[in-house]
Image (tube, rainbow, N blue to C red; front, side, top):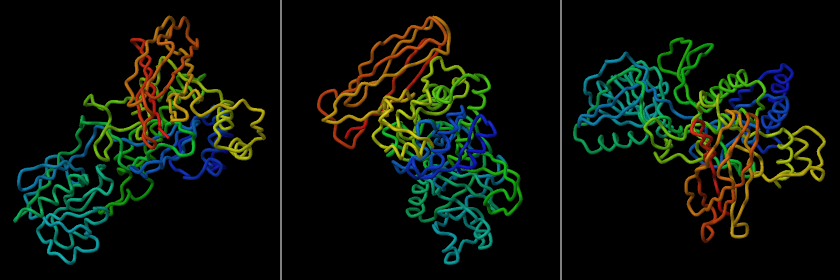
Length: 478
């Protein structure tokens, strides 16, 4: 990876889109090291978190000079409804057949591992339920099955794929309900109704089950991922066979999912921002993307996590769903000079001089550097740690006015569980564009220290009436 990034720097590219990870410590992570050098040349790196959600603490590409991108759904669904004999309907997805086609009610058979066990069952004339639909359609068809229901292996993230028989992939939660129906009904039946592409599906976005989650264990508490972007069932161009499906037909496009699809969305937005704001630094662009992100879905409620259906945390979605239009005109930005990243490396307590020199590919003596703690980096989000021995943390942030002259921003923030926030000042007045203002956030326990291992989250907003600049906050208790 290092030679690729170094060549990109020599080629004077504007943005790097990296859809892979390392899973290694900073000093061994070629993406972290290469993107640091790229940032020094004004190049923005958009990199994917790994596809290992919903497990926690497995975030990658988590250096502060990288825009770390998770995956979310969109409001589009290629709908294939599973209708049971008792009238209940479950929404799945499929590329099989056109809008309006429906199978009749067919006897339902739950096999599970169809690739291994289908020969043990009589599937002739039946709709077969499998724990996976990938490359199974032809097997079911040859055995005499007329249709297939697949249960998602990725929780409540469903997959759009082509097949040789009518197929619908449903969520794991709905799969359990259909399995219960099969077990309790003397004559279970089901049909599949194809509705084609539908838009305006609610709620959207939701954090994809597979999207990598924080908190990071190696960056000193900086919230990662930074942002989420579309990464579920994205129509992509392919040079050869159209992905893995049961049709065995050549196709120039197919649907696929992953954080590898989300990172290029953000990279494209970065390119547009650099075109419109050529003087903005990589940190300024990162700030614009993060502080204007959407924290609510299209139903007006907070963005949810597909894994469990609860409200997504800051460690699931960072600042929220990227909003390219708002990012182009953010009002305020949190800028970071490149040297401040070295100060962060030296002051974090996480890296030796040798480590720092590996990361920056230079000759740095941290004794000569005025180091800063991770929470002191002028980052667009705020992540701190509180303990009984360290019950209060003061964080300073500086914002630059890139909106309009004579703008006045007023503060608002929500109540954090067990945590007190004191912000000063609570009004920021700007006379000119380009002017900077600073504010301090004092974070402390409300009463008694919270139990170690827990955390509290919230958000801080600066609102001018025209611009809304939002920063997520995470307070971890140790």
